[in-house]
Image: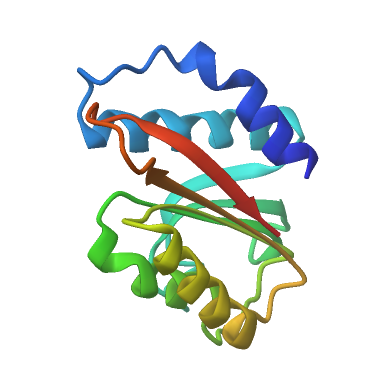
Length: 155
């Protein structure tokens, strides 16, 4: 929860606006978590495959490297803009794999509250990670501006 609180508190420092494209949001958020991992003493990597043992993770934090092996996958983060890839994102976060993260964060754009409820049901049945945080962004109903003005954490 502290990670989510810090993310929300610092979001204004990203200086993102409706004029920025989806890629800018993704890269800025991944960079934020990468810097946070470094500040906490972890070794962050983007597009990491854990030595080829799993699908590419948008961001990972590792505890240590002993010269031959990486130890302690601290965090796996996935960031997805496309609503059609929401279940694939959950699968990437929660699928079985040799090295399981201690923590997982998924940040996804979703079309509606109903879809959020459906994704939560899926996550509850597939999640094998003890500490998981899902951040859903959706458009508020009844608004004409294309702003994400509802952000909901599920943990």
